[in-house]
Image 1 (cartoon, rainbow, N blue to C red):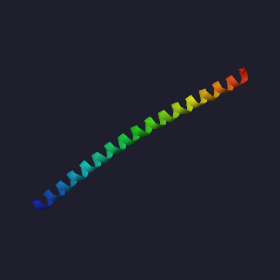
Image 2: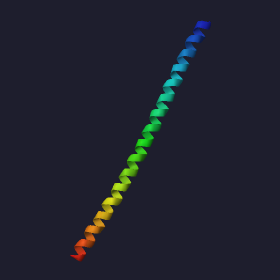
Image 3: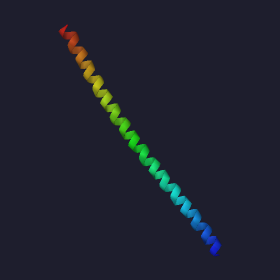
Image 4: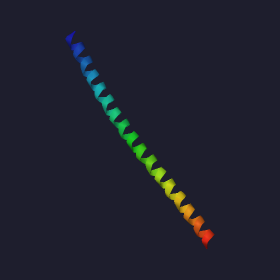
Length: 61
């Protein structure tokens, strides 16, 4: 009986380790997605500014 419980405890330990690793991976993925969205936002702002500058230049010249 102890061997069965020992086997289950090992399986539970492995499952908890796997779940921990998955949560860390999900955390890293969310950080990466957050950084990508920030970069995308900055790029859109830069493109907007460039289009405004081009518009102003076309009006001036």
